[in-house]
Length: 215
Image 1: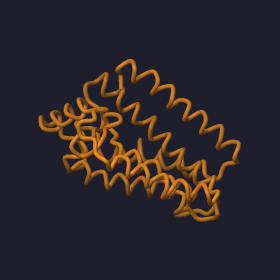
Image 2: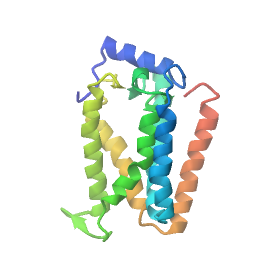
Image 3: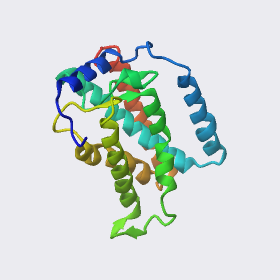
Image 4: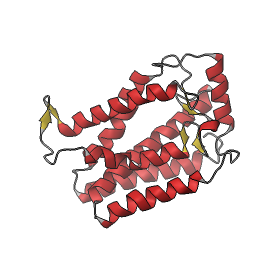
C-alpha cells in the first residue's frame, strides 16, 4: 500500500484509533516488560559504556519523533484525521493517535541503530554524499519501505490519498535520521543545547495540548 485510499474502512479504523487514545481497555503486561527490556537491555548498557554520543543521537531522533507525533495529533484535531493512525487492537496503549507504546519504545532506541552503522570517518563520502547524510537517507528508505507493509495491515492506517510512502520518506524519516546522525559528531556542549531545547519544546507542547484536549 503506497498511499492512503480514503476508503470508508480506513476512516472507520481511524475513528476507532482516535477514540482509543490513552484508553486502558487493551492494556496488558507487555507494556512493562518492553519498558524493562529497553531500559535494562539497551539504555543502561550504553550508559555504562559511556556511549554519550550514541545516547545523544538516540535522544535526538526520539525527540524529533515526538515533535512529529504531536504535529500529527494536532493535524488530526483540526482536520478530522491524522496523517497516520495506529489501531487499538494492535497495541497495549496508544500514547497519541499515531503512536503506540510499542512503536514509541522502538523509536527510543532507533538512534543507536542509526549511528551504529556509521563509518568512523565522519568526512567519508558515499556516492559523493557525506556518509552521515547518506546513511540517514538509506535508513529512511528502509523504514519507509517497511511502512508500506505496516499500512497494508490493520495495525497502521493511512487515510489521506496524498499521504504515503514517498511523503513519509522525505518529510518524516529523513529528518529523524539526520537528527541522530548529525548530532552524533557534535561537541558535547552543542549536543546538550540541542537536546535541552528539543525536549523542553516536547514537554511544553504535551503539557499544554493534552489538557486542552487537542491531542
